[in-house]
Amino acid sequence: VIKTIFEEVLEENYELDPDVRGVVTMHTTMPVSREAVLPILESILHSNGATLIRGPGLYKIVPAAGLPAARRAWGVSRP
Image (cartoon, rainbow, N blue to C red; front, side, top):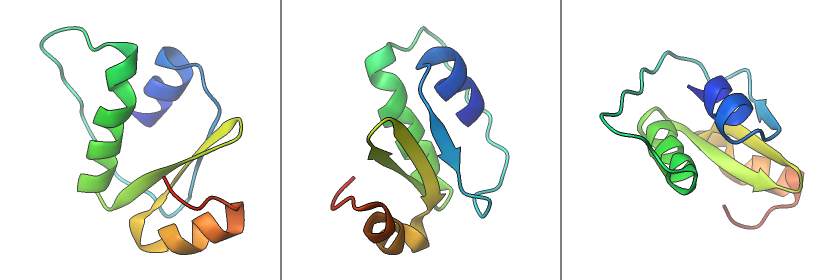
């Protein structure tokens, strides 16, 4: 899901923390607008113990437990 969303739908740069693992299947019954994709992805990540950090030119997907440290390391104060 992450690869498809970032590479094919949003065409954005992303980094996936190696501690974020798992398989998720996302199925929609109707088209999803580009504006709705990230909130849906964030909900999926949250349900699976991960989160998304937005930064300049790059999104990072990290374990939710490591969020405060990841934000400090990247200089981001909020999601």
